[in-house]
Every structure is written in structure tokens, then in C-alpha cells.
Length: 393
Ligand SMILES: *Cc1c(COP(=O)(O)O)cnc(C)c1O
Image (cartoon, rainbow, N blue to C red; front, side, top):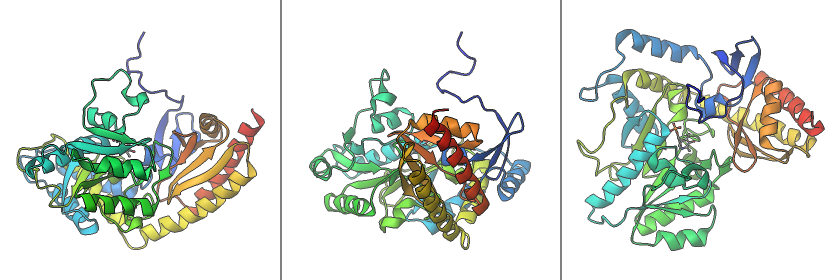
């Protein structure tokens, strides 16, 4: 008989009942070190006092009003995003995949209104992930996500990762309107796009006059040590998808855009009942204030350096389990020799949570608030887990 919860996930037999910072408490009382953070969602850890206060205060005054009216917290968050990023304007969603839907609509509407309605194609890359909605799976295009789900939304051109010649050839087509890319692929196995490639993409988009859409749903909001990952390359997109970390655990997503890229999105062209609701935005404002606060990102970079150095020695100590460390900031991947799922499972036994990704990678996406002691605790646990995997026990 089918489970009452639709069985689309293979779930570990773990039930967490409480979260405190980087720690999750299991129903049986065991304390797990959480290096998954709900897949880069709990950017400030669990139950951060400032987020709890912001949410409680909002909950005590107003939960929901329609976007037919002014929403104070939404306006404040949009102002903060405009202040700290390339964006002139933001639409709020509830998830990453909804941000993908709007990014696609925005790009198409842009070209329609510019009098080039044939520019409906969006170039995407192998190994990418843009969510599970119709546009999201069509954009990524992998067999795993699209099998049996057709007919797929048309208008995506899938290219291999890192093939510059294929990219130039495809991008010069008069039906291409945009390029969509993750600065660091998350689900694809923590594959960072080198800064030079992101710069090259920006130059190509400028040369051909097409839009650059970045998916920073996983790599954004301080994860790589900059507020947004593209800042490392010194370039800015035209449109950017955000979600995950921006809500700190409360469902919140966003599409940021320049005034020009957003020019087609006039009154009535898009909407969302819940998008930008007061509860989500009250939390989002607090997340932004903390992540952009004095010294916060400097600390992320310092801790990321320390964690990475220790992971390098872990890899050297367990060559039959790990091959290398890759990633950016606190978005790190352990490329495995052993099966990544065995490493994650051995971690469960050592009370540490990590997340598998494609390309046989184990992802480490800890809360950005991770402490130095927790880095040491993580290494002790990962070392024990790797020893068990190496011994095959
Ligand atoms: C998680 C993710 C999404 C989808 O976000 P949802 O909130 O699950 O819809 C899209 N793009 C990237 C890069 C992601 O990591």
C-alpha cells in the first residue's frame, strides 16, 4: 500500500525533533552535527535567536495579506537587496523552482517586448539543477528528472559543462535569448564555474546582446563567502534566481533583476498568492541584515579556509575513500572513491549529517555560523566515518 506521504523521497530513518545552531537532536536524544543545513537552507543554523524573534514578532502582528496591498517587510527586503546587489527590482517567490519559472517568463517577455519574439531559447548546462517544476526540469533536462514527464516545456538548449566552442556556436543563434547557469553547481556535485568562465559568459552575453541569468539558489546568500557567488568573478547578471538561504529555513525565494531585464514585467504579467508574504519577508530581512553585517562574511571566509585545509588532510589520510576536495567557501564537496552514499550513511552512525550529490560527491553545506570547535568535531566524526568505510564495516 502506498505511504500516506507520497513516496518520492528515499528517507533516512532519522527523525529530528529540535535544532540548535549547527546541531539537530534526534527523537532518541542523539545530537547530530548538521553539515547539510537542510541543503543550504538553514544559513544561520537552527533556531537562531534573531530569526526566532523576527518571526515571532511578525506572527504576533500579521501573517498574510494579499499582494493587492502594500507589504512593509517585503518592501524592506527588496530595498535591502537593491542596496547590496546589482538588482534594481525583486519579485518574491516561495521556492527556487518558482524563481526559475519567473526567470524564464521574464527573459521571454523581455525579448517579446523588444520586438524579437523569436529569442525564446535559453542555454543551460549539463549537470545543472533548477528545481522540479515544469520549467525547472526542462531547463536542466537530465534523463533522471524528465523521464516519463513529457512533453517538456520547449525552449532550452542543453550544452556540455565547459565546452566553450559548443557554447559560442549555440549562443550565436538568433533564437537564443539568455544563458542560465549556476556559478557553483550544487546538485551536480559542487562544480564551481571558474571565475574566468563566468567573466567569459558575461562578455559573450554582452557581445551578443543576450541575457545572463544566474541560479544562485544554492550558492547565494553568503554561502561562498561573498553575498552572492558571482561577486568573486567581478561580474553581474541581468536576472538572478535566489531561494534556500535567504529565508534561513522559512520558505522564501526571489528573482532579482536589472531595470532593463525586468522591463517586460508590467502589472498583471506575474503573481503569487504567498510570494513575499509578511512572515517570510520578516525573516528574510533579518537574514540579510546579519549576513551583510560587519565582519560576517570575513568570518565565513576564515572558517571556510580552516575547514577546507582540514578536509584536505582528511582526504590525504583516506585515499581509498576520498579523491579530492572542491567547492567555494562553505559550499564544499568531497569527491569520493568509495560510494558517496556509503560515506553519508557512515556519517549517520557517527552523528554527522552530510548530503550526497551527483558525480559521487558528498556535500558539506554547514550553517555559515559554524564555530571553530564544530569544525574540529566535524573532522573527528568524518575521520571515524571514513575509517569505517575504508574497513568496509
Ligand atoms: C534547490 C535548488 C533549486 C530548487 O529550489 P526549490 O526550493 O527546491 O524549488 C533550484 N536551483 C538550485 C541551484 C538549487 O540548488
